[in-house]
Amino acid sequence: MLALDDEEKEMIDTWRELSLEMRYHWLSGILKTLEMNITFTKKDGSERKMLATLKSDKIPAYEKKTDREKKVNETILSVFDLDKQEWRSFRLDSIKDLEFNK
Image (cartoon, rainbow, N blue to C red; front, side, top):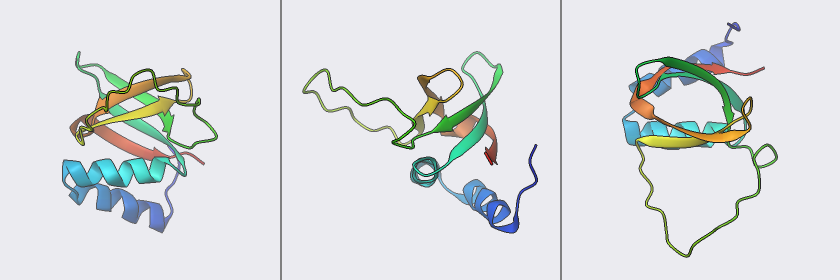
């Protein structure tokens, strides 16, 4: 695990104090500019760690397949897993650890 600088420690502490909806906006905003290691508990109870991002230069181009608008659920976040090169979703209340990727 990488040593966090003071600013990163403060950001992680801020995360823990936020509501689920605010966590959604906070984390999606961070992931639009950075890559993070996210550890969470999957639905089956197993733990998973992934290198995730929402950086536009790291994700595939979006191809809209229908005219239907998808309703945003601010308790679940979809991210691009850089190791698997696939989209993944997880519940924000299942996150166990966040690490800034340096």
